[in-house]
View 1 (tube, one colour):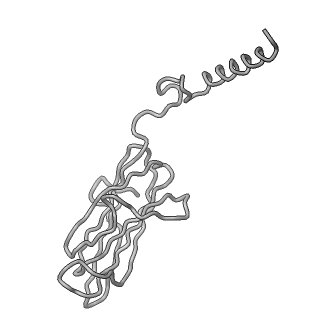
View 2: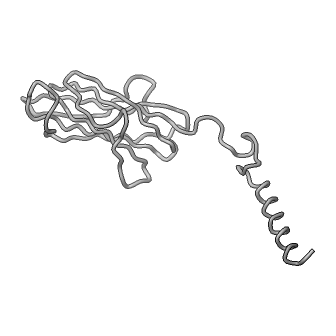
Length: 170
């Protein structure tokens, strides 16, 4: 066998042995070889309970503690109007629950009463943030908010509300 062909086969044999020995490679089988089993992500319930007397434009943001930027939630969690006395909720999927998920809820309270939740967003523009405790993959929780206040006193506040017993993420 020529020297060039012999080197080709030795290189490929070495790579085949290396691939077979690396955990998580195509040849590894089952959880005993370091392959994660079960659901590796978590759902976090988000939403707002509007206990104020005004409509509010609600925007949910999500991030991880290690990141410097926030993303606006999409899909069922996209920004929307929530009327006085209404509750709205959805959920966000965190693919890396051990990295410290964060939820920020922003409420832009409508400054005038037009009888409908439409039109321009108003002031005050208030936010609350929940830093979630890493509970591990597959463990779901809730990180909602509650909006209170009234137009005459102009004392709107938003604060964390864990969306019921057993759902606290902190």
